[in-house]
Structures are given as structure tokens and as C-alpha cells.
Length: 524
Image 1 (cartoon, rainbow, N blue to C red):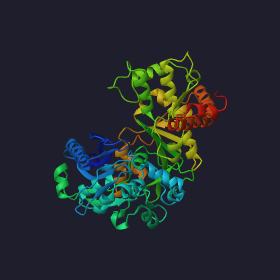
Image 2: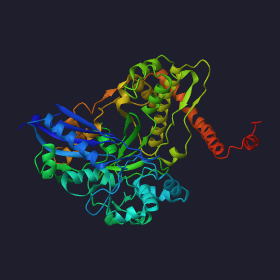
Image 3: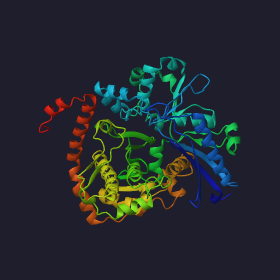
Image 4: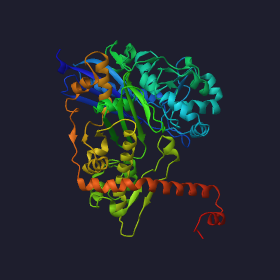
């Protein structure tokens, strides 16, 4: 059977959608199937899912993908998923908690306590993971404080991918990439940190064994029957979604950063060994033993422009439109002069998952005048997102050199997003990849793991020969000049708005107007 009749399956399990892709080994074709599942919010700040519903959706997507490639040999199945998820299991491996997603912020108080005590810096140094409410470390401390009886009943604490791999293979393990995102794993010694586990109140025996991301298990008979694959099909445990996405967009050279922008955004680059950021902004997670992905997620991405469209232009941004690249909405923004005629937006509608994000300035429009229209506000929102991502790139470049940026994600389908982002970055920029780049990355890592590619670059090039080249984005010098000037002003604007946000919080806590008039110079 020739390579055109051989495929590898890459499965990327996201927050609300699973993508299963079948990629031909000669790069000639791909078949992608998706399934969705609900994100539940039973209480403010809680963001959970039923792990068995998620597994059922994943198996359905894989089954549909296998049916699409009937007659082809499936050489392996490889998995990718988010890192910051937690499930508690009892001794029979039955869930005793829902799946707590990375967006679950119930442990915000725990994160604040660790920062106030000064412990967060040492925790980040050891684990490579900033202390934030999404971290499994904070979640488990929250359980110990608020659900001690549940903790007693919990035999295992595992992640989302660990549960899925167990359902596929019957083996309970984790892997280096997911472990390095828990906040409990020593990324330098490559073991669970005894000191951190003591702090959390969890024993090493409650956590799964850690395999390399290239570890290979075998599909169980029951799972094979459910998805239409032979028992014993190789299952590559794979990496977390961020590292998988970097591989899937071929952004794995040491001076290339991958920038993903959909509802949220992410910026990452690859280094040869764990790299810990002293500012506690960036996390570090494994792709393989000698390829580590340094970067961060930005919670304010295309969702900011979606908010602006729904709030300001509902007539041209109906609910059925693409949430971050609605053509009618962006066409209106294109009519506005770059720089939005002096209107600036700080896009922090949500706190980012970093200490700086949680204590940073609130979102704000600055410089608003009567001549500004709704279209100006939408354009300023888009520019604000790109300017913020440019600032993140600059901070990442202080840790490790970045000479080129590769763009991927739904927002960059639209030329306005591409043009503004490239002008803000002011460096060689190209567009690469599809929405299924994490699934492609999982498949490429799987191909390398089973020995059908000599290295990661060859693996991704075999599955998508065009991905390594990308489509260059032309940079408009006038745009670059405009945004360079705006970026120079942003630090001062953030400082001022940050102080305003602090005052508003203080006033909300103590609404004594007379006291605040006396306390603020010039207020009277």
C-alpha cells in the first residue's frame, strides 16, 4: 500500500470543540471532523465539563474521520489537549469531580495568597508555570480548603488528556507536556516536585506516571470497536495544545514565533531547554524532551472585536456571523484612518492568566471625541488587540530572540487583521496553517514518534508540504509608522488607566464621596 493510502489521525480536544483530522502521509489530503460539547458554569467563576460527554464527542469525531478515509491504513492516532485541566478519580477510575477547565477561576484567592506570600516566584522558577487561577496547582489547593471530604475520596488527580488516553488504551498515564503545565512538575529535573506537592497536599502516588510526549500505547479492543480501528493501533500520547499548535504551524525554529488569534490569542516560540521568565508572564511547556515552548495566552483577542460589533454595530454583526472576522463589521472598520483618528482602546475586557493580567489596567477607550463614530470604536478595538499582542511579542523577545512571526487562526483570514498585525509587529511576517493546526501538530508529533519522520520539521512537511513556506504579509510603511508611535505611548496610558481602575475599585468598596473628593487632588 503506497503512502497515499496511509494516514495518521491527529486529535485536538479543545474547550468546546474537538477536531479529529486524518492526514495523508504524502500531504495529498486531509479530512477533518468536529464535534462540540457544552461548557458549564454552575457558579460564578466555575467553568466545568462532564468528562464523559467530552470523551463521547471525541470518539464520535474520530469515528467520523475514520469513515471518511475508509480503505486507508491508519498508522497511528495522536492526541493534543489543553494543559490546565483537572479531574479527580476514585479508586475505580470513576470521576468524582467534573472536569475543571483552564478557564475555571474559583481558585483566584489561592493564587493571590501565593503571590502575596512571595511563594509564586519560587513556584514559577521550579515548574515554569506562572501562578494563576487556571493552574491545577491552585485548583488542588482550593479543593483542599473547600472540599476536604472529596479530597479524601480522590485516588487520582489527572488532566483531560490523561483521562482520554485512559479511555482509548486502558492505561492511566500523563506525559511531559501536560505535566509541565500543572504547576507541580519540576521542569529542570523532569519529576514531580516533592516540595510543591507538600504545599498542595497531594502525594506523588496520586499523580500519573509521566511518559515522553512521543510515548506510544495501544488502542484497546473496546475503543477500537467504537471508532472503527483495529485493536492495537498505536496511540501516541502527544503534547498539549499550545506546543502542538506551534508544530502544526511549523513555528519551531528558535527565532520564529507563532501567533494564533481567534477569540483569544497566543504567542509562543520554541527553545531547546526549559526557559523560566523572571517576570512570571510566560509559561514553559514541553513539545519533546529537547524542544520547549515558551509563551502565553492572551484572553483579549478577537472576542474584543466581537464585543464591539455586538454592542455597537448589531445591524452588521448578527449573532450568526463569524465572531471575530465578520465581513460587514470589518468593512466598516476599514473605512477608518489607521490610528482611528486619535482614538485608542486598551482591550483588557478580561484578565489574562498572569499576575500582571490579573492586576493590570481595565479595558478603556481613550481620546474619545464627538467626531468619532461607531466605526472608529470598532477599528480602535481591533488595533488595540494587535497593539497588545505586539507588546507581548516585545516582552517575549527580551527572553529569546525573535526574527519572524507566523500567523494563524480565524481572525487572520481577513486582510485587515493581517495588515494591522504585520504593521504592529514590524518584522517579517507570514500566514501559515488552518484552524486545525493543533490537530496537524498532534499528527506530526505522532509521525515522528513512530519513526516515519526523521525529525519534527520533516514530519509536519510530509503532512502539509506548503505549511513550511507560508504566505508573506506585505507591510505598509505608513501603517508601521502610525503604530510605532502608538506603541510608544501605551506604557504611560496603561499606567494611568491602571490607577484609574484602582480608584474605581476603592470607590466601589467605600462609596464615601466626600472622602474621595478630599483625597484626589483637584477633584473639588
